[in-house]
Image (cartoon, rainbow, N blue to C red; front, side, top):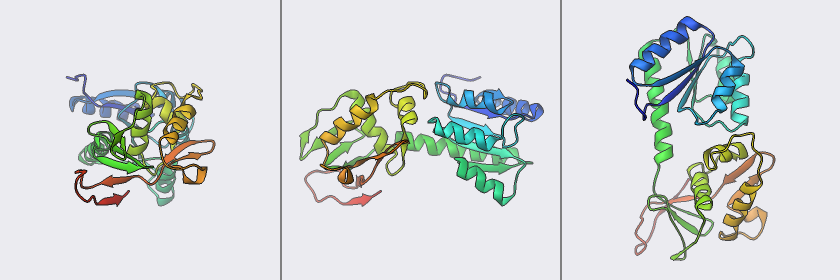
Length: 250
């Protein structure tokens, strides 16, 4: 029986016999499963809130192919891990899947044990990224994700709750572009279609307390027309402020 902590999985598959058997099996393994049988309804579910923990997506769908569905979902800010499950097993289609934003690609026919192993790996990887702790230095700030503290030269830096949430979000995705849609969904808990300049104001507030007077020196870089990317963040290996620290670039 599912509980409130059951991972939510979306299956987008037009073969109803396969999708139904998958749903029943996954539910027997304590997953909360939703099914759709076409690309457009799959996209609508993928971008809905609250988000899913994993999406299993077929490439060949009746109204639009899964690659197009995935590209649009990613463009709309969906960061959910996606496992493509399809009969298209040639190298070209696999590359197309990964280039569209898939996290894994499994061809039919498949063994249930392999599917479950891949699902568990993707869910575990996402959980580890979400729960990652540690201390980071970026833009002159020292950010302790475990204690949710931000300091500069040993002195506390006062941030609003949203400013800290945005900074933590960018640190967890350091080096990767976070789209405005992703930030709206994951930090603001707003639908991707909502347009707001609030994100820009909070980014500028963070830049004001970080190093860098010019755009080329900002730690939070604008990716024009898309969103933002945090660069130069280093994880502090030795968290003791009284000893020499050894940082590793990430």
